[in-house]
Image 1 (cartoon, one colour):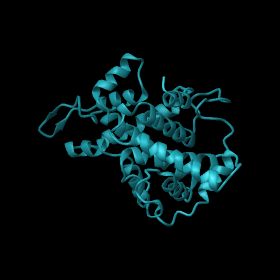
Image 2 (tube, rainbow, N blue to C red; image 1 turned 120 degrees about the vertical axis):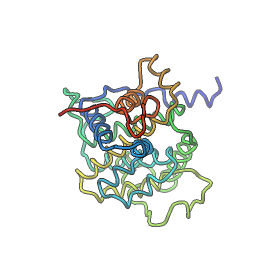
Image 3 (cartoon, one colour; image 1 turned 45 degrees about the vertical axis):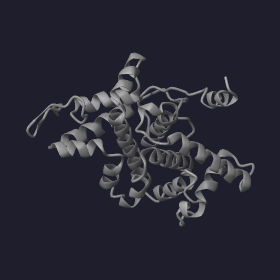
Image 4 (cartoon, one colour; image 1 turned 90 degrees about the vertical axis):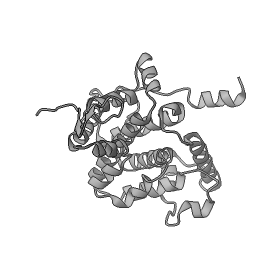
Length: 275
């Protein structure tokens, strides 16, 4: 095996898996159910399928963050992943790692900020390790360029920092000037755009911040599920399943998906909910 392949394997040799908590299941189901019930016409369902976080920004009246959504999907994922990590570790005072669940006896007790980080890490995992399940893009290139820029930043400017200090250093970066005007467009790094997003998110009241971030990630998860080819969903089911595939099936069951929706005139077959 080539040295580069060995390195890539080593970089991701330990990828922890976690159980989908009750709180996360509830959030995913309720968000999708609300969207399904709000749609009345074919155009409404198409809008829901195309939504990558816009709806959450609109409902939370955070229109000024639209720039972070109106990008290529893989770019937006990296932006929001870094921003979510920066916000989480600089505002939570969390003493346990949501990726492992250490220190928790109740798998149903995840908070909005923990759920946000879990979904953020999961979406990055799909982008890098299972890009065939994501909309076409250059996610790996953006990821490598972003990592390279981060290494340059810390090597040249901020030596010997702890993880906490490194995050604070990123949040101290001046972001008033668009990063592309400084570095040009050859680099696909999103590092400093993500710092800008994190700082804008930090201006929100804490409860509003994490409600918004969690809802944006749910929308991104749904967009990725709908745009993954059916073949790969079926393949994942044969291998034990993937959260993305379960979301795809749930969306189809609720009438949001394209593949198994029956239309007759303006009538749309969808799941009926009762109180």
